[in-house]
Length: 355
Image 1 (cartoon, rainbow, N blue to C red):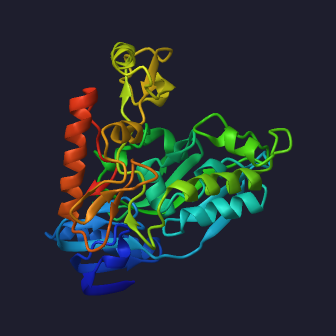
Image 2 (image 1 turned 180 degrees about the horizontal axis):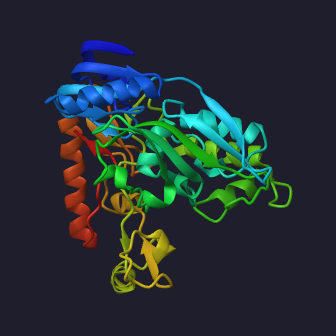
């Protein structure tokens, strides 16, 4: 276990915000996690559970403990009983894209569309990360964790996590309840590519790749190419990827928006994919409206407010233009939210955890 006092979090958040915490604690296995859990439960100081910091915006120093899993590559292949299909059991501090790369190179399919998403495996289960028509909830089977209140090692099944679009119980009623140690992803040796989200199919055609001949590596490379063409590298320009969630609206709201904005961009979403209350019909259609498109239509793309700005190639991403404080990013966020509400009548919520 590693413990550091008065620790700078500059390199632990991809926005590149220089804030400090009173103590920084790194656990490297379930036994250490249990020791940390008992200490957190017995103490009266606040604590923050941190992965790679790719979904975090710090607005001030954290007056408490920051707890994180050790950063290391740790993957085990499990062949499910009665099946030759592979599952990957991954340490919480393993970089998620390293898992995608490993899976693709070994012919294990199901993660290709999630290529180049920043962060670690533990956070993937908390955030229900997703991109290009895929969500991690569709391949997670179990999450191993230590319960902070008791120090017990528990196994949590994906169906109990309340997964929905960028949502899980870990972000709400289970917040600060568990220290995640391992996440298991069920993959397949059969390749069933998802190509109908965004411009994936168009990019494949431009690259001269047919669906019939497509390989997992080609799909991964294509997704990486798309992302790199429009997303800033956090190592160069501080950002947390997609800052806002895309709002999902019902048919009545969609019809209003379509009438007011004939060029409206949207994706149809079934109720079971849309974080819709259970009493709603699973067969009803809902509509996901791209927040980046609305922000662009409001004139914010490429604009700057102080030292915070909107990326010039993807309006969904807020960036640190150099030396920005967390509060400057928040001020920009609120200005954008106000304009989207005024022009579209929709609330756009941050995907990023603001501390």
